[in-house]
Length: 390
View 1: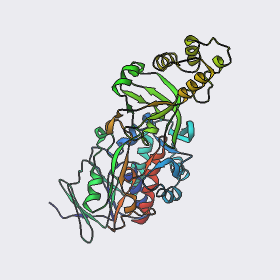
View 2: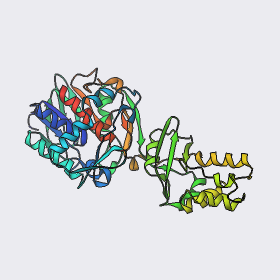
View 3: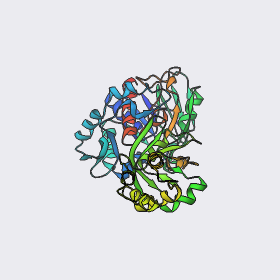
């Protein structure tokens, strides 16, 4: 094997965080090498947002992130904001639009975001090498990184390998292994922004409603999201369920308000409709998709039609308790919760406190954004901070 090639920084992983860090570090005059284990960079960028890349959110705040340390994200999000990334997008003349809740998408394609990084990295002299699985990392006065066919040295190693979600796109637990090699703690990774699976009993009741959706409020503990819920053959999905899945704890119930803001039983309580099962079912159908209303009523009928019973029934409509059997795993998860313990890292630079020159950024860190562009903003912000410290 030839002598090790030297750089100012080696970045492991050419996803959103890795490419952003490479761009920013090279902009500061650093010689940067990016090693990507798959055959091309930015694969998850290309599939994100239905191929349009929900690249940030105008309303990004620390409250939109889940972590063992809820304060950790504050410094990075303040140093590099959605407005900062938006200026970068606009400087490349990428057309974009705002959807609901501050979500920004490319007008044309997610490829525009990837081209931005490919153009700038090439212009600033970044070396990107694909099909480069890291086989060994050693550290003396610098980091030595060995792949199957080469060795590289640098005083800084940035780990941006992502989480364990969507393994078919090349995700592995490599970043966690690197952390453990250097004695850093890892919060156990778990699927997040993931569909939830029915129990056998609920599958028998509701699985054939696959394709039916409704605007709901899904809640667990203090977390609550008002968005669409989608029935699938296996369980529940849609934005409201993906959001609450990041907070849900196995074995416990989530609460679903099936008719947010509606006073469903009011026509029956006010005797505008007869007090019987048919009228109660009709009242439910007036606010829910017909198939969902009929099926939910079939398995959750009111027991009586007194005022007290109907008021209790109203409460049940707004607090449907369902205990998922589990989630659909990393294969269906959009992101990974857990990761490198934030106590091990500087919140300003993302450098490991006990291993100078070793950085962790993006999804591999124990900071997980909600649905809607927040995880991309975390990638940009954490990468920017690390790049300034290399």
